[in-house]
Amino acid sequence: MEPPGDDGWPAALERGVAGTALAGEERSGDLAVFAGYDGGALVAVLDGLGHGGPAADASAIAAEVIHEHRSAPAAELLAHCHAALRKTRGVVMTLARFDLERRELAWAGVGNVEARLVRRAAVYGDRHESALVLGGVVGYNLPSVRPSVMELRPGDAVAFATDGIEPDYSYSLAPGLPAQRLAERILERHAKGTDDALAVVVRYVG
Image 1: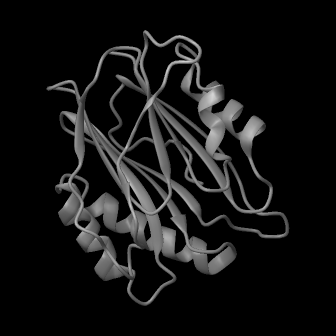
Image 2 (image 1 turned 90 degrees about the vertical axis):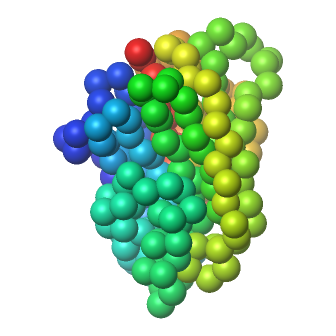
């Protein structure tokens, strides 16, 4: 898990991270990558296949590539990661690019890292929009990815969860919660305990 750090991150995006490694493992293969740039920011949530050191190593390699190519289009960025990960276990990941000038969110994924958009105006029981996540493994079989683009409004949040989180975590998504509290709530309520688990929330505060 990578805690938020000072990497040119825009003040308009509030971050929250909560994760845990599988019991008995010193390192988690689940990793959050935050890369700010002029006019926006990129978030990637990675899950190295399996768990422990080899999974963590694969995610760390991908994180370096993502930082280096943070401004590249999603398909190009994934291709760079794919090439760098060929001799590793590979990873699954979901990317979200926040364009603060256009107030747009562009997101896509490969594998099974879920991402859901929690609108500021949502109420309990609303259905949350999800990123299109295609089958595949970055480093083994990379599908052709085309991100979908959504309007971004102040108060909207994106909640990511790796497969160590139960898929029904939508029931715990609540608009208005601080990003860190919402990430902790997802982990506390929905971690399976049978794999590395990571919840990440990015909220556009405007």
